[in-house]
Image 1 (tube, rainbow, N blue to C red):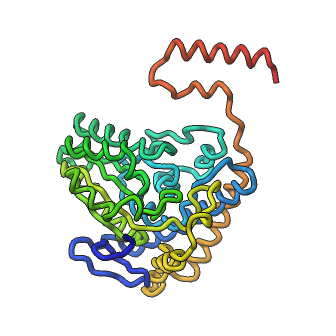
Image 2 (image 1 turned 90 degrees about the horizontal axis):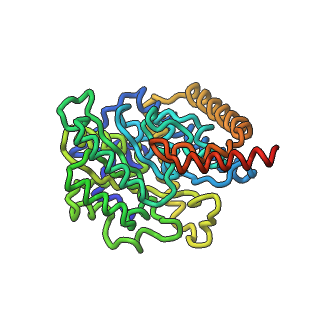
Image 3 (image 1 turned 180 degrees about the horizontal axis):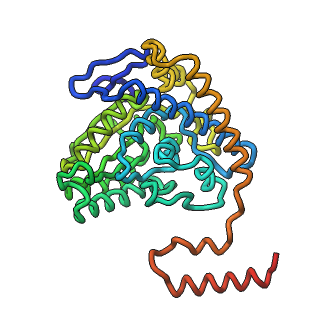
Length: 363
């Protein structure tokens, strides 16, 4: 289940290039450095957010450590016009879509449910209900096709959708229903499953007797399995699947084989259900280390760049600490915002009632 046979890989765990019969990297050295920078900064973002939760500044946090390549590789493959639907762990995708890290913290601090403009960034907010957003993503993709925003043959305007979820969501009805609709309507969507081996405390091998990607065939989807710790391969596979979706080629299921190096969330203790025997193996497959080795070996990454990047990461962490603590408390009346797309009399009545109660209570 965690082997790398029949898995697309362009950079192995030692940082050595791999020749694939179908996929190759179209990224130049500056693009590879940019991916490396993204992964380093996103890991620092993740570490700082975890620390803030431990200090009582956040109610919860879902660490992404170990999954940087899957998120950054696929996230940077998205065109600006594409839409992405994420779970609660896609901080790397949010980074790629231009979300300020302090804004990411708003949700976890409880100051704002939707912490950014989804239409501006073309990324919907964190979804905590496992697999629910797969239906939303599929519906949006169907709408894009039916309204002529995809499959027209115009490579400059056609758009596609990516739905992110984990291996646990593959056992949810919403995800499987999404597969049915996406295949039936040939929706321009890429289902990106990050198989991090654990659905909280349930290992993937208990959920499926076969690699998850093999389920694609039964639904009529195209399926691809990729090394989720190889940022170059993740970028190549996702870019190709998105091009196919935009041009009317239909949906694809990508299984990115990776590993959740940390806890499910900061309320979880993974030592209660896993013995750590796999941790060393997956540490040797660290996505940042392998790209660093490659870039160093090819004299693309030098000490000056690394030093500047380390300083940038330190500055990012400090800005997050300050920004988090300065986040204002939410206006109680804001709970009535963004409930419906049009005004609703009953909602207005409830808002007025609460406003009156608050006025009587005073400060």
